Length: 258
Image (cartoon, rainbow, N blue to C red; front, side, top):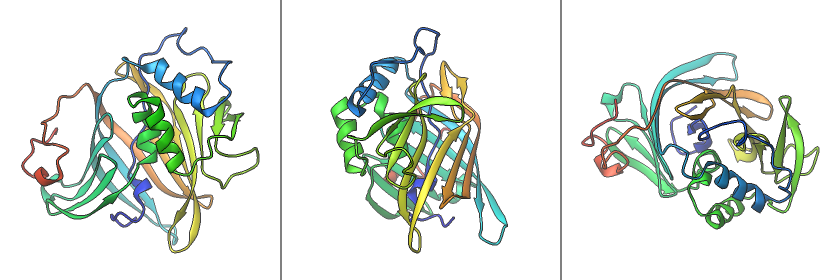
């Protein structure tokens, strides 16, 4: 994958959930709309979800010729809405920054390109637990999800809620939420990459960490073909960051979390 803003969904992190216990994870039988689902997601983890996360990401890009490139990214997250990605080696000053619904491409420590973007996976994986419900709803509608379409289904042997597509529709913008634990597991959206294509993102292999949940494997498919993998290690929660860490103008001068 080229490290540009052209395919921003390839730059995303895992999704986590907050404190867990048996009573909290009981399915919510009264959820029948997207609005109720977002409300339930926030209510489940309000005041429990940790606000910061760091990890090392092994990124694997699969090429059409069957080969693959592997790189390391170092990521820091502060909710709501802040994600910093440093490409290895950090000293070269290259990476991406997401902040206030804006994406920045950083090269040699300075902003090379920027533009507005609501990061759908950041929203569904993290910000939905922090933002006002109506703000999340408005952002989801702006991303093209048809919130009037709501159903239940099965995904990887578990019951899920599906928002945005009818049964059998594997192309329309849609997101899937685990019914028991109310965390994000799957997204399908059309994307452009030299022509129209459909992208599927999976958040797999959930485990608990720091009183919450983490999906250490994230898979990206283009038209059904595995295109990109993310594997996470060295995950830490509850970090305190330099206030300038997510300031694009202070990319080199801010104290780095590593």
